[in-house]
Image 1 (cartoon, chains in turn orange, brown):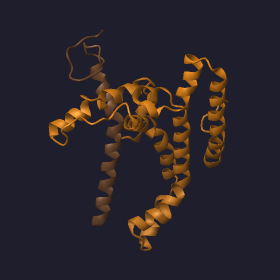
Image 2 (image 1 turned 45 degrees about the vertical axis):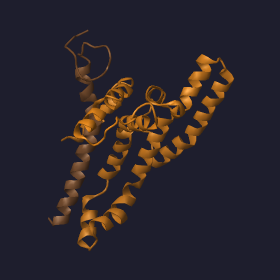
Image 3 (image 1 turned 135 degrees about the vertical axis):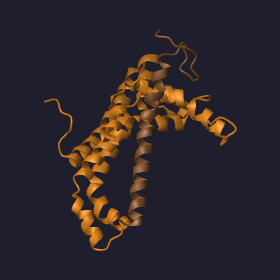
Length: 184
Length: 51
């Protein structure tokens, strides 16, 4: 199995991403039907239009963005280091935590930061799959821009989002080195 | 290869397959629904239509 297959959810268009969890997670959707037919649950689970639905959908959309930097870091760890740790008497867990993990830690941080920055700006997924209390800042920016025409507050919220993203982006660039996507 | 290494490898493979299924399943699930006659995106399928 080629490892690029997991990246296919990156390329699926933004609107299909929240629609597919809606098909699977809704009250008589696939997951609930399956679990009821197996007999694990009697009542359908509330998987959508609350925090759970948003978490599952955002995990599904953003997982490749976390996996790819971590994969890049894991590729750079020489194989013979773990073999050397094994031959010097370290068990699998010891090898992982004191040889492997410190070397892929920058990749994990970069992946986490990237996902955090991306998920800060997610608008349509929490809108379609979330409940009352699950809306993120972009929802309120859109709300104050289009519903109540309070552009001052919308601009202020946008500035909050931007200034919150800048330090995160700076630390991301410090971790990764150069920005992976540039204009030139 | 020791026995514990085998089980660690098997666990890693299984986890990888589960994650890949989690990523690919919604995309596979949505494909038949695009050919469904019903205008609501829900299973079970009702009929074949290209509309």
